[in-house]
Length: 462
Image: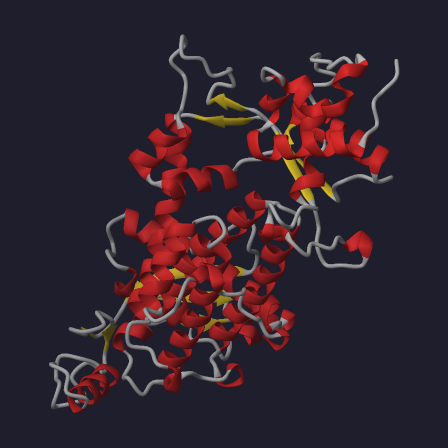
């Protein structure tokens, strides 16, 4: 079979396709229109489809190489050509024998290389029992319904949490778990926004001047930053969500924020500890919201503009630069030991609470018995009552009495919970013998009296 090769004919076909689409080939009179003077020579216009995948396989040629039709992609230069751009093809696992393959064949034939640098494959979406979705089974989950009922960020979070390299499951029960994960993340962000409402840059404290607990959080921020950046670079979104969920729920809400609420709510405005805590919360907020922005787009935008109303968008913000100096492995190791002791104290408090011998942990004054002298030295400069959220705490290396609370996986630590001695502070609710020492404010501790005095001087109501 002889093939007509004529630039004028090719140009007429190309112009027709550009203005009318591929249907121009099948229109009445198309043969005569395209052939022009060759129409009388007996050439046959073939209407058979050679390969249904050829058009899609050649998409790179007109998407990545036609600046006139795709000006937003003009100037792309792949890393293979010495540039900075990476071309990724994203499709389902069935496309290994479809689009991925046809693109590879076409490009290798015309360009001598693959049209992409990365191929990212995802599975198929099934119901929560692993069955194919079908209207007859009534097990379909429409994205529009999820967005309407729960919001677009719930759908985006479900996608990010899923292992897209395998088949994905979705349904009412799975979405309940996603909604609960989202609720916890959002509540943590809301709490940070509330805490930062009166924080100003002038109150910022340098890392070197911060208490150990704040420096520990900066260390963890540095560690999480490395995990998040690596996961995003590898399109591993489930690791981003898993790392941030654990960090925000376990290390922030249940540990750092819980401990620092007393400092934030009750310390005087001039308190260095309070200012240091707010400085760290500001760093945490900026990092967490920008980390979550690619996934929880609308929630992150809402939070960012609430904090920075004059900003354009969180999606124009880079990830926060986390200083390498924040990394402190020795400090982290020290606090691992402290948190183990805290875990024993918390266990003892739960036993007392279950037995209704105490209500709040502030009613307690735990006596902690530590047999390891190195651990005893570690606790020497730590305010254990602050860390355990009790009114008082004492540490001793004496032998514990029979019946003291212990945990099998924390050897050498035992706890006896005693009732806190003193009067309940009307402001902090701590039970301390110093309540009433300040005659101007007889129902609070001296720390709280100083805070009230400062707030009054600033024009606040006390």
